[in-house]
Amino acid sequence: MNVTRTPLRPRRATRRGRAPAALGAALALAVPTALTTTSTASAAEARATASCSPGYVCIYQGDIFDGSPNHPMVYSFYRYGTYNVANLVGDYTVKNCQTGGAKVQGRTGYNGTGSVAWDLTVNNCSTGLWTSLTSTNSVRVYP
Image 1 (cartoon, helix red, strand yellow):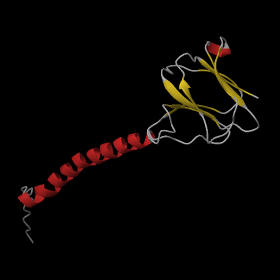
Image 2: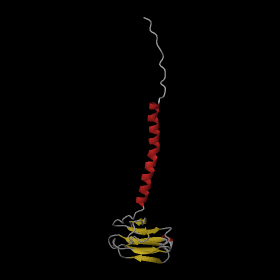
Image 3: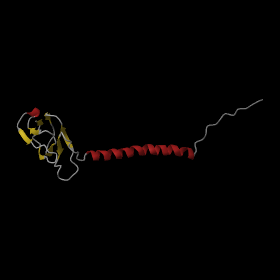
Image 4: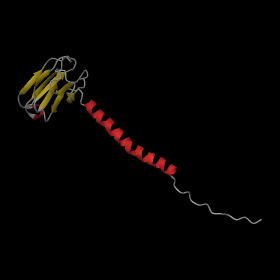
């Protein structure tokens, strides 16, 4: 029995064979665009005014009571102590949501030195102090 084997020839690419590759390339380009759009939307949502949780002192940029949702929280403090702050130029809102009668004050010097720039003795999350914090270089949370 004499069998002749014929080598297989490679298939030629046809229009139908290229379509899945083109579709795959198009999808690969479309996915990063969709992810970029989503991350941009997330960044916009991150700028919305966040609430100050009970037990914290929070500092927001601008007047958070003006009805605008775009006041980012720039600092939050939970424990008693003195904290150095930077780049607080202009008007900010300070909310004291500490419990147990804790107070907070801004100091003109670093590490709690210098004079008192502002003092917030009311710890009530529904109110806050709206003032210029330009001269504030440290924040002291104390009992």
